[in-house]
Image (cartoon, rainbow, N blue to C red; front, top):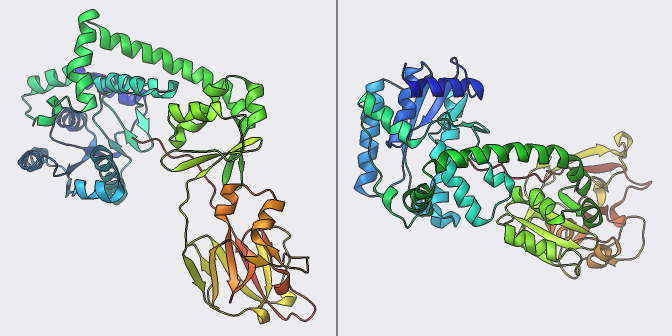
Length: 453
C-alpha cells in the first residue's frame, strides 16, 4: 500500500470519520485533489458515490470538467450524480458572491443526495495546504482564536479525509498511479484572494523558512489546544452572561464587566452569529452608551437596551395580514398557532401568556393576523378602558425587538389578542359563555447558525 493511502487510512480511523460499512458521498470536480480522494477511498475499500457540479462559470472549460469526471467515474464503476447550476443567476437572486452561491448550491445538493442514498457523510478533498491558506486569510480579516485553528476534519455531515496530506503528496500520488486530472485555469488568477496566498504570499514566506507550512500547522495545533483550554474555562462564564430569553438572547452588561476581558468574550459570543471584529469593537465601545443603538450582521441584530444587549434575528417590516377561517385548527405562518373550539365546560385554563381563551359568540370570522401599527387600541384583559398598544409597550418595558415581533389577532377591526402577551377584555369568558376558542402560541427559539463547511 502506498504511503499516502496508509496516512489517509490511519487519519480516518483516528478521527472516526466513517466505517467500512458506511456509504460516502464524494464531491469530485475533476481537479487533482478530488480525483485523488475518490481514488484513495475506493482503493481502501470504502463504498463511494460520486457527485459533480457544473457551475457553468468557465464556459467550455466547465463542460470539459464534466466530461472528464463522467469518464473517470465510469472507469471506477461507481454510482454517479451530476447537476447543472445557473450560479450567476442564483447569486443575483440571493444577493451572494459567486463563491458563496456556488458553495450554497453545492452543499444543499450534496445533502439531497446524501438523504436519497442514505449515506453516512459527504467527503470533501480539503488538504493541509488549504488549512494553511485558510489560516492566513482569516488572520488578514481579523479573526478570533477559533478562526485560527484550521479547518476541522468533521463539520456536521461533511468530512475531510485529506487534511493529513499536502498538495505535493497528492500530486506525487497522482503521478505514481498514472492518474490524470483537469486544471482549473482560474487557480492561477491572483485576483482571487486564496490564489494570491497560494501562488504569491506563501512562496514568499518559504524563502524565509522553507518549512513554513509545517511550522504554521504546528502553530495551529498549539492554538487548538489553547482554544480548548479557553473554551473549557469560559463556558460557565458565558452561560451566566448570555441568557436565552424567549426567542432572543440577552447579554447582561454588568455580568460582562464583572467577568473581565469584555471584548474577547463579546467576540466569542457573537462570532457564530456573523458579527465581524470591527462590529464587535463598536459594540464594545458602546457598552455603557445610550439605549437604542443597533448593530448588524448579515442575519442578526444587536440592540443596546438599558443594562443588556439584545441579540435577535434581523427583521423586515411587514405589511402582510393573514386570514384565519373558523375551520382553521393550526397555522405555522407567520407564527405557530393552534386553534381549538370547546364547550366552556371542557376548558382548562392555563395561566400563561402563550394561551388565550376567547368567547366564540363574540368573534366575527374570518379572523386576521397582522403586525401592530401606530394608533392601534385594545382593552387589556382585566381593564375597562381602551389603551394604545404603543403605551402598553412602554408600560411593560418592551424592547424594539419585542415590539417588532408583536403580532395581533383581530376580529373585524378589533384586536382580540396581542399574541403571546395579553388578550382583550371584551372577548373574555364570562358567565354567559357557552363556547370557547382556545389558542396556543408556541415559539421557535433563536439559535446560532451552523458553521459553514
